[in-house]
Image (cartoon, rainbow, N blue to C red; front, side):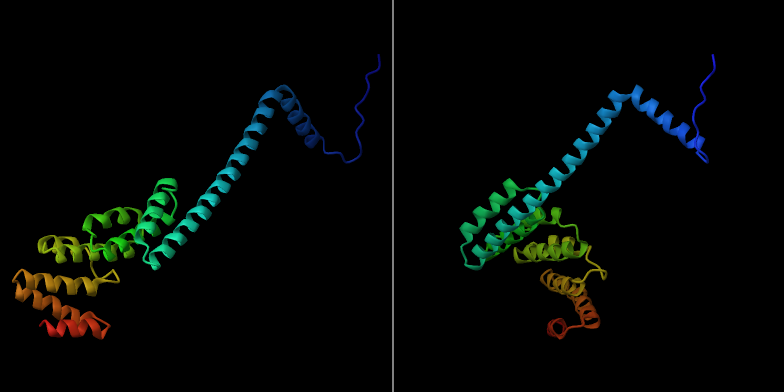
Length: 211
């Protein structure tokens, strides 16, 4: 019986066709796994876009709430603003606008003269910027100073060095604190540094008055 020859076109790439047949045989024998893989990929893509949509919805809704908090605060409706802050913290705890809400919460407490150093800690945990955290750290030191806890003031502001934008103002606070503690020589050194390092006349004048 005469064997039939496989028809080959001129210049056909036999190696390429062999690979195609291999792939076809593999897909045929592993069809269930291939379909499962395709379905899995489709589900992952769908989940990704759904997650992205959900994140955008969270950002949109929480941003509207942050705007309403700002609006209520500017109108001095502090109780209304506080309710919105609590709602935002509860419903959208992972939204970046929680930082905004916490900032307004601090401002409300400041307006009511009820802010404490511990109130700043909740916001500092969420703030990743070292520079912004440095400003909050100085404010925490100021609150200790205001409460007459001068030892804690010095301890809190100690890490603020010249790499931070508020070094001079923190140094000024240090000078006032040392004066309260009766350490006039050290206070004088701090105010001298303020005069040398400050780019602004405001701090230079404060330092001059206390030297």
